Amino acid sequence: MDALPEAPAVPRAYAWLVFALSFGLLLSDYMSRQVLNAVFPSLKLEWGLSDTEMGALSGVVALTVGLLTIPLSLLADGWGRVRSLSLMAVLWSVATLGCAISADFGEMLVARFVVGVGEAAYGSVGIAVVLSVFPRHQWASLSGAFMAGGAFGSVLGMALGGYVAARLGWRWSFGVMALFGLVLAAIYRFAITEQRLRPALEEGQRAAAAWPPVRRPMTFSSVQRAPFPTRSIVCVHIGSGLHLFVMGAVLAWMPSYLNRYYGTTVDRAGAAAAVFVLIGGAGMIACGVLTDRLSRRAPARPWWMVIAYSLACCILLGAAFRLEAGPMQLVLIGAGTLFAGGTAGPASAMVAGLTRASIHATAFATLALANNLLGLAPGPLVTGVLADRIGLLGALQVVPLVALAAALAFALGRQHPGAGMGERL
Image (tube, rainbow, N blue to C red):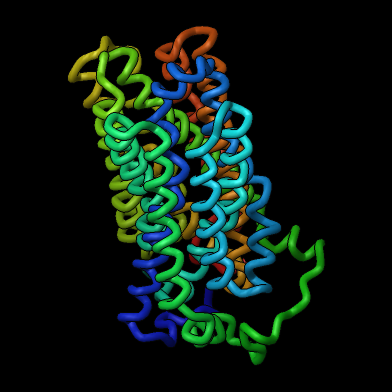
């Protein structure tokens, strides 16, 4: 941490432009990913899909992201982060257009896989670019705000997707998301350049070699070791991934839950589910800001904060899905969703503070790997498999228990030396 500047050498206004456009692309990322959930009822009716098949369509994107995030992040570090981000956005947008013209489950699954390829490294590379132009005392807040873009993108994807599907058909829902991504990718490519970002990266590394064009070789063994300087960081990855299992499952299946148990139409279910996603995004920001403020002079306090967020999520959602359908249940679901993404910002800040700036994209890629393979990919799929056997309500009653496992992982991480965020390892 001592090697990192307090104020990166880029104009403040340009730093916020970087954040705004990177945030906008993240919105597009999750709009393309989550629009599927809004049209679940339509696909189930038209194609006769099972809950397991629908869970597979939802989870395949996160699975692909998890598998490819590290290799594609390494390529982005070498090839150029800005060019890589623009190319990723074009790829996931074109693949989303492929979803619109899919004729059956198999074609849709392939198109969704390609969406995942395009989105694989965006989160890790995008957050690395954002943090490179801001002072480190804002990292948890900015990480939480940036990652909340996923929740807000999900809101727009589900609400707008449900609205369009009810009026023009589900295929147009995918088409609208694709067009938005292509336009924003073009704007990003011309507004953000490697040349403008270079001073912040040079200052952050405090090295004679600049990025780009000089790039240091990295061996496979160093790539393996660098993102995991201590066992506590391993626990951060596990805890973060397990916590997002709950968020991924609940938000993916909320439109279907409202459609089945509250009798809402496709467009109303999408809009109502979007409210819960919005609450989850607000929780990401609020929990990140709260952790920054309470932990500025107490480096070990973030561990207690993420444990508390996980337990609150488990208790509130666990209680909610055991109530009868009605206003009180919806209130408790909203309260639990507020904490469902609460660990995202603090976990990212921990990883940023305990790894070298030069490998931040790779470090965030390993966190994205855990978040997707342990959380966002299996969450919707496992819930769908359980729903085919014990019903969707029964499945959602089981899901919150995974947040308890996340709390245990964070508690174990706190026991290892070097767990404080402020200690450079």
